[in-house]
Amino acid sequence: MNFKNKKLIIFDLDGTLIDSIPDLTLSLNNMLAHYKLSPLTIEQVIPFIGNGAKLLVERGIEFSTKNKITPKIDFEEAFKLYYESYRENTCIKTYAYPGVVETLRYLKQRGYKLAICTNKPLAFIEPILLKLNIKQYFNHWIGEDSLSEKKPSATPLLYLSEKENVTIDECLMVGDSKNDIYAAHNANMECVAVSYGYNNNEDISVYNPTLRIDEFSVLQDIL
Image (cartoon, rainbow, N blue to C red; front, side, top):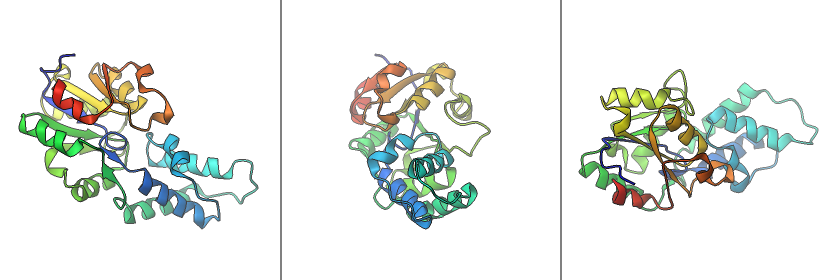
């Protein structure tokens, strides 16, 4: 696979660059504890990731209250509780996957433009990048609330390509979930899927990425 014509590499965040599940689970459980609901395990939370914070909270509540008699939960209150907890625990146990830091440094040194397109709220992106000391590698980052549409819409990817003044053919999307692949397909953009991410425990290959890789550092070989 030849991606040597690429100029802009767009990365998903959670499940691609970082493993944030421990902190997301902690914050979700802090919210559930307010309603005296049992905590969820990391394995239970993983399928809830990828469609934004509100769906994460909605799925967590639905899972925790299924087949149980509980008082009606006000969603806006629950979301606020989750949001505030995550604000306080944004990057406690979150870490960059193996090979990420070295590969980002390599790509930046090679002259590639790097950006992040995630369905995480914008407010949480920069604190994580700063804590993990990788902010300096990215020209831009956008979250689920940055634009009128989020992944799997093509809008965020098109926005970033226009922002960097590059053609779609000169862009590459790198992600771990079907939303990343669908967004790339919708934008007519080539995409690389990492196999180690969340993606609802499904094999990412079934969504037909341009290429699937098992280790992030493989990007150094193909770019």
